[in-house]
Image (cartoon, rainbow, N blue to C red; front, side, top):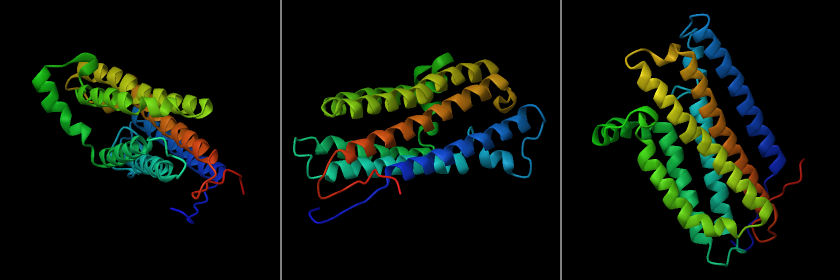
Length: 237
């Protein structure tokens, strides 16, 4: 990558994606109010387009984009010529994982695991959404592999990386499990009209997006500390 130069205005990127996240959250709240309290479950297509609990809509596309952005940032970190301490493989692994998660977010791979895993292990309650089991195992394995590399980074970057992971997993695992317990209790009843379930979905999706935004912040901070062939400009324009 000698002679190559990538310039990224960190504040501009973070401001832009944060504003989009806030706008989508506001539209999701309007969609939920329309469904739960006004009885409008479609509203001319507005509700399914902005409901975070549904798939293949505006929030899904945005979350997919966040995964892709972070995958690219991980790849840039790996390409940085200052990464000569044997850690490139870890950053490349994280880039590959986030590419997979972007695909998963868009085509719902994990959703397809719910029924077979639930049937195999006879799960219920907090594990009603049984995809959590293989994915949590995968997260633990990934943390074991890349943990040493993360802990070798600067304290400020390390703390932000950990914060982003905790925030994301609080939503993706914690609130997902709570939502599963409510869905299990509801049984055949529609979850879209249950206030408790929809609040948990909102918290789940919000924490996931917040975790991805924090990860972008952490990776841009890491890149800003390096002054190599690949340059990341964190000065606003």
